[in-house]
Image 1: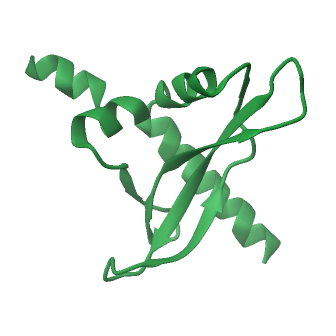
Image 2: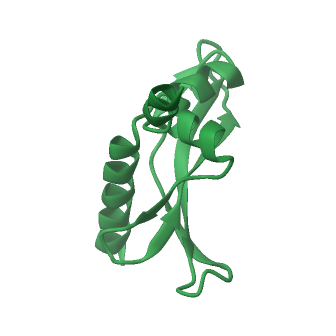
Length: 110
């Protein structure tokens, strides 16, 4: 059972299930972030649901959110469950890479 638990928490959905909280990362800017999936409805009949990642940035003491970065739309699908399934299958190493890309994009805009 332990092997399955270890394997499961290597994906975003597995981590959420095993630990019952979002995964936390130190971004390339040295700041603490967590990861969450956002799903929105869009006006596309073929794929009316889209999903992307939002990374809330926490205060150094962890007492509150002081900002965030996000990815562009990463998944499109016919329903909420479909796009959530795609997001939850994402490996945590990929989530971290997407966080660092989002930080770079934001820093390029400033």
